[in-house]
Structure formats: structure tokens, C-alpha cells
Length: 173
Image 1 (cartoon, helix red, strand yellow):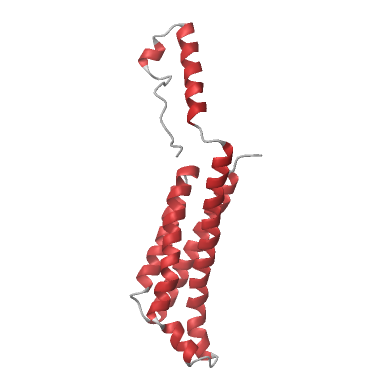
Image 2 (cartoon, one colour):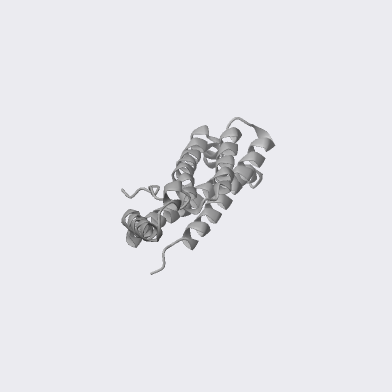
């Protein structure tokens, strides 16, 4: 819809430096006209930011479900909560059902928002957490639990910081 385009007129251009005063004035007017034409209206920006924030909130929830699952799975058998619930929590399909939404939300949220706030470290932290959750699928015992907790924690932290940065960039009313 609205794409960020590079202005063809720059002040470092040798042709610009060779212009006289009136040429530079005309160039600056064309530059500002170009910027105004290619900037998305504030309501479009607000809608984009709202969608990113919603993705981050749902991503925090999905990663939080992974974290709760990783913490409760070893605790429930100690409390006597075996049976159907214990078998359901150990099911491999449940791990995938928790992992897939967390991965999709990370892929939908981090690249889009990093284009806005230019803090790529948050995307690295978020994708590191997602990678740890994938690696935890192939581990067993205490390592599975530890890697899952660290991965879900990294994802929650990345979504939280991402949300704060995007809200800071929201256009004023």
C-alpha cells in the first residue's frame, strides 16, 4: 500500500552542489513535496502499529502458555496429578500446538516492527527464543525443561520490549 521510497534528490549529490540559490530552493521544495506525497497518513500508521501491538500481546500470551506448560509438566506428577492430564501434558502434539502459534506470531511481529524502530537486537532475541523452543522438542529430561523455559522467557521479553518500542513510535493525536 504505502511503501518507503528513497527520494531521488539528495544534498550530497554533486549536481545539487553545482546549483545556484534558486536551484537549491527549487530542489528543497521538490524534496519536501516528495516526502509529503510518500508518507502514509497518520491513521494508516496508527492501524499498522495497533496490529503489531496486538500481535505482540498475543505472542506474549502464547509464549506464556509454553512457559506455564514447561513449569507445570514436572510439578503435576509430584502433586499427584497424573492420569489423563499428565499423559495429555506429555503429548508431543501439545508441544507442537503450543509452539506453532508462538513461531507464527514471532515471524509476523518482529520483522515488521524492526522496520519501524530499527532495533534489530530485539528480533535476534525473539528468534533465539523461538530457536531454543524448537531445540527443546528434541531434548529430554531436565534439559528440555530448562531450554524451554529460557526460550519462552526470551520470546516473552522480546515481545514485551518490541511492544514498548512500537508504542513509543505511535503518532500523536
